[in-house]
Length: 155
Image (cartoon, rainbow, N blue to C red; front, side):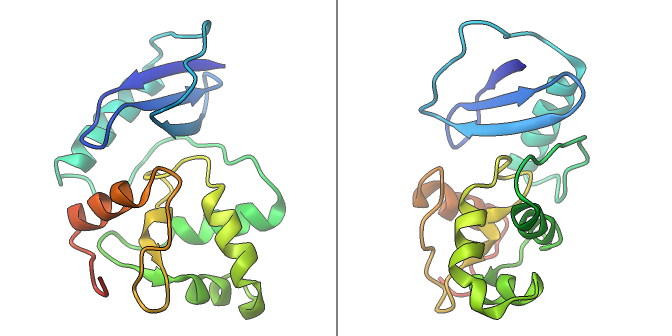
């Protein structure tokens, strides 16, 4: 596994890749691997796209990604990718989209285990009343991303 650290408006981001696919994006604080830091073309591409996103110039990512998880998690993450820039949906709506309205908690858990936040936009899921309801990188990062996208429909 290869690793790359980049600066962003929401702090340092750690990107992980197997050399072919982007596999993880982690928010600071993170454990910095002692080995595997390497410049690979995918990291340059990801860095450029993330910078363009934070500059308000990119609305969707075009990166080779690999989402490792259960079939249910991958289904949830697949639905996250479909949420348009500048739009929010509720956890209930996400559960409906994966085909099980009663799975709101499971959907929330899968959302929270998203290995590629920002790129797979789990920040676009909010509570039914518009509350931000947590985020792996912290609610303040979620709020920043939603403001960046002008998607504070409920908040």
